Image (tube, rainbow, N blue to C red; front, side):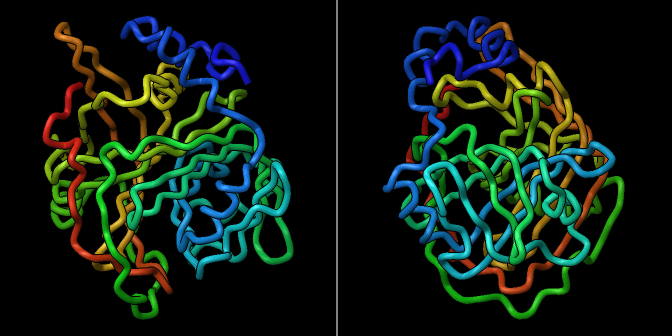
Length: 297
């Protein structure tokens, strides 16, 4: 897949605005449709997988699937199979059981600061679902915090709270976060699930229904920001690594471009789901990414 064909008009527009088209063209050559042996081996070691998709009403969400290593595995050169499903009440439970759902996935390993993204079309199976890969690529380890696994959480309760604005406790959780995931879409060009990392406090809570975060210098692809120029729908996932809790937000986002070259995304909360995942792996406190000492935007 050439760099030009790797991007849709939204991503190309942001690349042009920021002045990184040549670099993005080069980086885009890493996007393929096949799952290489090293990628298949990486997936087979992961205890969780983030999936982004739209629910039946069209809202974007990011959800977290968990299981023993091997629950996600490559079962063909362009096919990944996931055994199991989401906890009761998860907003994407219906989407992951629907044939033809466009989905974006990201597997992130806190132990090694490695991550892999795979986007495609979903098909239900007898024991879970499979994704037929359309785009597969790895990202650099920038802004990933290092953690070590500790133990499995006690039996979770699935979804424990729903609302349309953040509670004071949820606001504190967002301010304390050093990692979250974001799902976006450009409709015909599919769904992306990506990672955002920073020091605690990098996500601002402007009000119970509005968040903001900086866009740090990355791989120059601008897939997420490109999607948002085409379609403002977005879903956020904040995992609490140490307790096993999961906070999911759905809403709309837009990117603000500063005169100094900085970029900032503002997100309007429309729906909130908080859950406790059964069998969730608990992780140690983080070793922060060395790149966070100089987060050039």
